[in-house]
Image (spheres, rainbow, N blue to C red):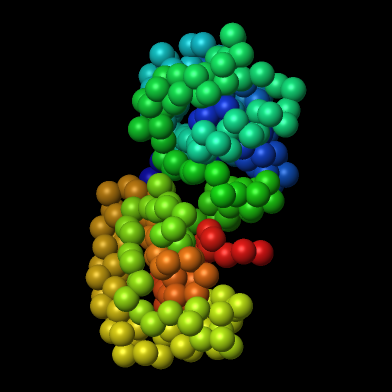
Length: 287
């Protein structure tokens, strides 16, 4: 087995989607970080590091539309780097137009494509130009619902905690706020009895033992859990073998507070002993 020379995380995506926050999170975890690195300089930087240090490199860089050659050359450069035995991940961050406009309204930094001041047009243009980058990404993350602290924690969970091969994430969500775009599997559990209609459970969420007991102890809940675990468990080694790094399973109910949360917590518990690291995110819990 060829020994890797280093770990490289390239953060890209839409302007205003949280790239600086993600970079700061990795810097706090010991990564050498560079913002707005021109893509032709990346191989030169790696060559210089090899000449001057024998240490395993942990590098995080932001590359985006501020560097006009990025889109034209990133695929060629990344292929060269991977052939030189670096472990490379490309993260693509995006957010809704509403969130991006709001983020730029609170900062003095102009959008790189908003030369005439039409911010929404610039956002749409950037989305179109970055399609190839998004398709090439190891992981696409919609940051619309993240706070700054939640995004930092998410990046650390995904890219800093040690893992080998496939990592599994279970997400709970409410259908009224839309399906998480990063989901590989979407499971609807609105067929289960809703704790919302119980006065003693309405103000709790699925992490509470009383809500979990209500959801999981039903015949429907037990049958669903048994069937879904039997379905997903044999797929994990297959995805791992094909080289997939992340598998995201999204479980939805109406509001994302009770049923989906309880099911996600139980799925994480059942897969905790598997060879694949498991993380949990409750997108729509009001905290």
